[in-house]
Image (cartoon, rainbow, N blue to C red):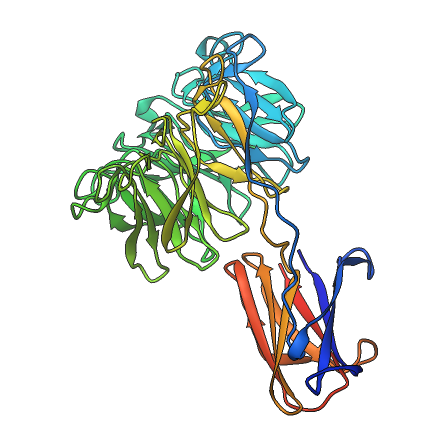
Length: 510
């Protein structure tokens, strides 16, 4: 969100309390495309020259909704492994491991109200088609969706495919026999690099049969850029890659490393791999990372491990950009905690990390959670609660453009074939709406505190002027934030001169 937020403070000489002027505040948020349309406006007078904070109405309670229950029918899938992806049309797209007429998996579309469409049904190796997709889809810059299957193709080592939004599918690459040193058996979603190429991993194949990293053009020209060796580099990468702000790619290998329980690595587009962490070095270290890495708004990297940690039930870990590795949460330390996350985490617009565990929670069917970037777990939902609820999610969640979170469970639902869910977390305060306090600290002097709920990733600068129109705006010295991590922020301005009025605006860069 970008735009300009203006606040006017002025003294009213006709209303005084204990000899001091009463201060009024008028705040406006202007939508960037609405040419001055008021999004919010309030006026507030406080006794003793102190402005009170705006009290918002009671926010609606968070809610959990099952949007679809899979039935393993000829026109429906079953048992989704993957995270959903939101397309440019606002719908969510995903795959199921089973289901469809051949029971080899499907691709589907669903909207935020649960309207479901089966788009494609895989046929398997006999038809030279893919089979058993485990990975999420990628919508590339050309508007088409790209993905992988674990098996299928003429060699039954899986395929890379392209699908139009209407469901027309084309196989772009069939993973080759072992002698060709191509990758095989891809669990992982693709990503598109800033160079326009697609990048992915396979859990097997390559020169050493320990897995690969590959790149591919949108037209299907695939090449292996790295073959794992089951040494300090790792073995059997289950997860896809993430491109960091430095242009390099980051990922995990489920096994390998000096201790045999996985690695966290960096790799360039030219295939130069550097191990950053070998799991299992201590008894409290995580083990077996099945999921990939994200980079937080603060520049640090975050991920999960399926096992290990101080309670042996998995971890959420952080690595700083300077290479300092820390477990920020150990699963299994409290009653009914989530256990063994197979999916990774995402960072929401509120700066929290969101994810899900495969088991644990009140019903031992898994749990949906959020966690601060430095720790502090909050359980949001225990799966298996109520008839038709999903159970045992194998992946994480995605934040939709509506601010809600969406995901899939491998089992559960009335048919025990999995479900798609929505979790609504209403904000306690709308982003960038102001609360204002102003306190006199000396004659003709006011300390003005402006607080608001920021959106993670924004760059903010508070400016002031003596008039709203035809004025010169100056930066408030303490009013700059670069790449906000989200959450509440407060900016203080000391008004040392006697002024009849002062306007503030907040410049926001997404």
